Image (cartoon, helix red, strand yellow):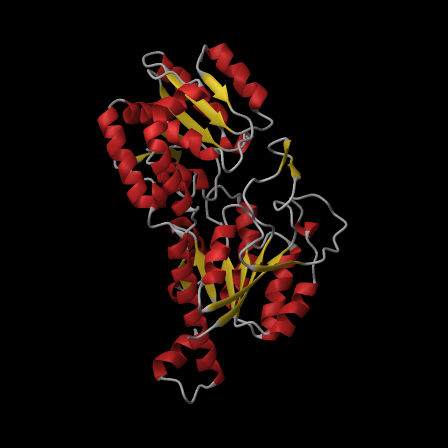
Length: 413
């Protein structure tokens, strides 16, 4: 069986991506080496948006080969382009001669060093990122077209996480033949197993959490930061509570926590609960006990909380600024999409979901059906499709006389 030696460059061990790396490393066709820019996430670190020190309670560094590149940057700011300055990736790619390199994102200098290393070593380059055309200022779009567009068109493949990400690549001139579907996913197998295990315990679980049986629970999962607009949920649930009392549970923490709690008191929203930071093994309890998941973000490239909640058969309500909405939310089937910032529309959508327990269960079942297609198995299939495609292109380019006219035409594009 053909074996592809693949390098995968990503910023740090991410709890959502590590299981995919394990699946990829376990596949008989793939010999995988992961290059990290940082090992934050695998050890305790302080997240400035959560405002607390975090140590994930699931292992993140076993099951695959990895190494951390030495960082030469003097700039500690996480949002700075020069936060990661690791030119050694160029030498690694030139020395190892991988069959392909997958780079996640382009926000730091090191990703661009990896692009250069791939081009210098003539290693097929695949990009996986979260970019969409949502919410970008005009000058940013112009700058990207001047700098990013030519780089994207030189790459052999794009690993699209969803419909809006695919649309982004098309807008920058990438032909459809170079775009492969590698959907953004969470560990469906783990979450669905937890959902099945906890389902019989739901009444007891709600009592343990202090959630009254007679109140529908609207759950939010994420950081309490401005771009995620948690205050919109306070407003919407306060409107709902005028006719149908609900409990709003904000699973997370962040700088807006005090404002959110103060606004809830001002609006008379009696049943508000902010959990604070919740670790990975504890997250399932909240999903299993909730009735609907809401994601009101003003800008969200994807929104993996939707994937998680749907694994627990929750209906979902998301703003139209959530990148996952076109893929995961089917209006009237498993939830609703509403205009970001329109809290009355958010309240109406939640009301429609919560109006009928029977319909809520039907919508939740549909959620689980939909998210089943957004899995690590689908990711591995998409990556293998990309690897086979770029290998065919490479062989055709190296041996044009032996390739078919179709292959020569495709490799020239």
